[in-house]
Length: 76
Image (tube, rainbow, N blue to C red):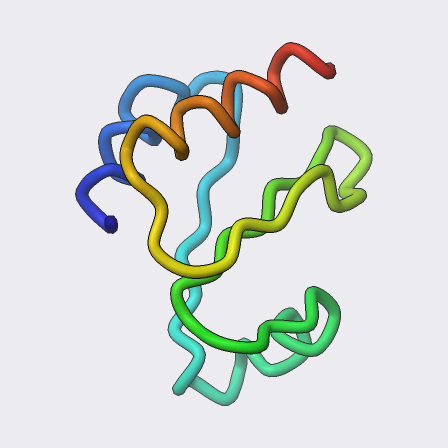
């Protein structure tokens, strides 16, 4: 799934900020708590104001990821 996210990042890098967090790293605990990370993989899409637009739990196909990003951009 990481390769799919990287392709999304290459395509939308001028419109979306992408951040991949390592949940084993202590410095990410604040964000993990804020977005209620329950397991991995988990993707949180935020709108321009930083509010949660959509949360994707578990493995997502590349098509599902593209659709989620397109929905986010359409909502902006």
